[in-house]
Image (cartoon, rainbow, N blue to C red; front, side, top):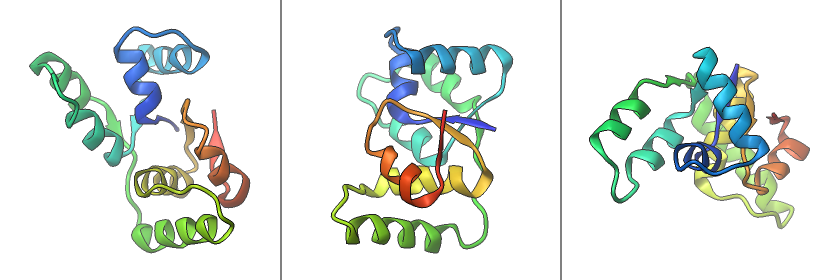
Length: 124
């Protein structure tokens, strides 16, 4: 399973270039891209969202949430914060959904490196 973060999904949708965008495009072409629910929420809350883009976003597969998800996300975030590392709530929720499902995360947000280093998040 491979999932996209909001930063890479937004870059893809706005036509930006980058290795992450190429990965997103490849997964979209295969029909294999997943997005965590938080990414969907962030993308749907973007100002200027068109009905066509909203429809496209709703077609992506979602990363399932497993029992105990909320607790594990809080524990992972607490671990990073106790080390003095940046751990935004949205990132914690995205990372935990991917960790729970063994999904690789496509992202251009460098804050996820902390989840990779300390919480077993796989980065694509």
